[in-house]
Length: 120
Image (spheres, rainbow, N blue to C red):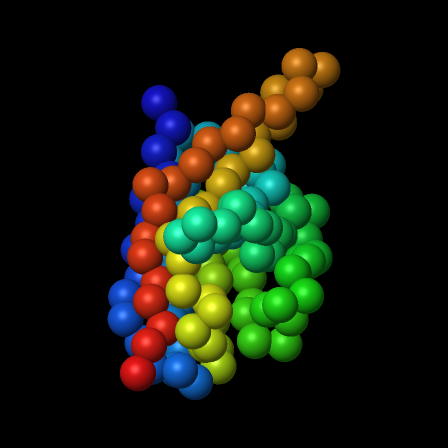
């Protein structure tokens, strides 16, 4: 059974930093493309950052230069370092694992979400 366990959310003042972690259990982590998504109240979910199994990273324009996604395959964990946080970053953040199934495509797994609130 696959579980994604997130941690690291909380309340932070504008300009502050947080680091989110997502440990993946039950998959071959190094084969998974990993990503972080967020959903703010009344808004659609959006992709924040992604890091493929092969390496490299991509970001939403709204977070470029402020957020950094990374992965530690030895710990089966993906991170999202968030700096210079803004009130508009307030959302529930979810990590997602894309687990390749060969010719059958992919299975997608989601974490439970962690709340990030940026306010004075």
